[in-house]
Structures are given as structure tokens and as C-alpha cells.
Amino acid sequence: MIKKFLKYHPVHKKLVPYLDVVFLLRPTLFFSVWVMVVMGMASAQMNYFNHPLWISSFSWATFFVFMGLTFVCSSTFISNQISDEKSDAINKKLFLVGKYVSTEKSKSIAKYLLFAGLLILVLVHWFSALLVGIIYIIWGIIYNQNPYSWKGKPILGWLANSIVGIILFSIGWGLVMQNQSNSGIIPLDISMLTLLIPYGFCFSSISLLTTLPDMEEDSPSGDRTFPIVFGKGLTLLISLALIFIAFIVALENNDPLASTAALASIPFFIFAFIRRMDKDVLRAIRYPIFIFNFFVLSVYPWLFIPLAITYYVSKYYYWHRFNLHYPTFLVDHD
Image (cartoon, rainbow, N blue to C red; front, side):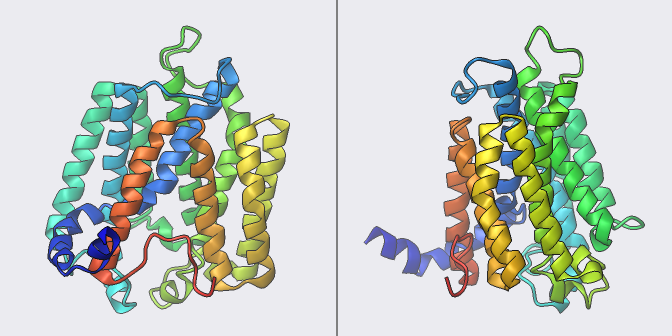
């Protein structure tokens, strides 16, 4: 009865428009953002402490760093939608800017989120504020705005996303190391670089795959993304190579989290490379993200709360607003 009410009662059609502003922030993208930060925390924990696989104590400092990061990244996601407003309209993509939320209001929200996020971070953790500021420069300016517009360039767009993945990992590492007596003013060290490699490669691999579903829409818009320039086959091959290298390096690092998650993800990349079907590409994007989030909960169980809220509220919103089953682990013809 409850399920039927939540799914079919007409009152929800009247309620979901009030969530348009919330979903302007693209909350489902944080499944990839939050997990990279937590994997940085997990790596520092495993490298320096005797109880590596359980960060169960609640920290207000960590909470506010995640909040500040979420606000700033949301600002960049809004900027991305604003820059894509015309092309999304032409390609008939699902978009909120200009249709459900005015462009001017969207710009104002992005500015407020940026200011609030950076203010929170400066007050709580200056090093995270510095790194998140760099994320804004990359994702909010260089990636989206002219004269840079890296998102429409094959190598630079992929590079921008990969760099952000590295920075997200570094934020998590810094959160664990900030209060340690052996940590310097900058809470990073050389050992982090080796431990970072498998996570950075996994993030880079999935980031590259996300350009494939938009090939047909990006090409008429003049974007020169990686698969448009170099082809679908090479894109899938590089993604598979990156996830495989990530697994090998994780084994060398004796990292149970990265090695197990990468190994469980590899079959989806193999299927995508061999069959090259759209549904296999979508699986190779969605399932590894779920796998990494699932395994990382064994290290930082507090992450389950924002993940669960984001997942179910998103399903509610997209179903009643656009009649879409999203987010979902099902792919057409599963």
C-alpha cells in the first residue's frame, strides 16, 4: 500500500516541482564525488593505523568538509548546465536550467553555493578549502567557460576530471592526517602517491566512459570529446586498461579495498569492450560506482546515510517529475 501511494498517487506530481532547485545541484553525481574522498580517508587509515577498516566515530569537522565540498561542486554542476543550456535544448536532453529554473536564478544559486561552501571550508579546514578551491577552478571555470571549455576537448576534458579525482582523494587523506602529530603543515606525504594510483585510475577510467553515452548529442553541438575524436573502441580499451592497471597496483600496495573493488568491476569493462553495446557501457559506468561505494561503507559507514537519502529521493523526484526510473541499476534489456 505504501509503495503504491509513493509511486502512483497524483499528489506527488504537485510536490516534486518544489524539488527542482535541489536537483539543479545534480545530487546523483555525488555518488562518485563522496566515494573518492572516503577512499582517501580509508587509504590514510590503512597506511598509518592498526584498525584500518572502521572509521565509525562521527566528526563534525568531517561533516562540514563534506558539506562545503558538496556546495562548491554543486556550483560547478550548475555552471555546467548553464553552459550546456542551448545544446541540451537542441538535443532534447533532460535539463532544468531555462525550463524549470530560470538561468538568472540558476546563476544566483551557483554563486551562493560557492560562497557558502568556501566559507564553511575556510572556517573548518583550511587545507580542504584550498583543494576545493582548485576543484572549482578546474570544474567551474576551465572545464565549462570560454576561452577554455575543456569539456569539449578530447584530452583536456578527460584530464580535468582525472585531476579532480586526485584532488578528492587528497581531501580525504588530509582529513585523516590533519590531527596527527607526525603530519606537517600540509597533511600529504610521498606514500600517498603510490596508494592514490589505483583509485585515480578507476576514477579516470569511469570518467572516460561517461563521455560515450553522449556521443550522438555532443557531435552536432561541436564538442570534440574523446570518443568523438578517437573512436569508441579506443575509449573502451583505455578504460579497460586503466581499471586493470588499478587492480595490479592495488595488489602491489596490499590494498584490500581497491584491489577487491577493481577486480569486481573488471568484468563489466571487459563486456563493454568486447560487445561495445550501449547497455554494456552503462553497466560499466553504474555498477563499478556502486561497487566502490558498497565496499567503502566497510570503512566509513556514515556515508550510507547521504547515499541512501540521495538515491531514494532521486528515484522519487525523477519518477514523478519526468516518468524516469533513475537512478537505477537496471539497464534496458537486462
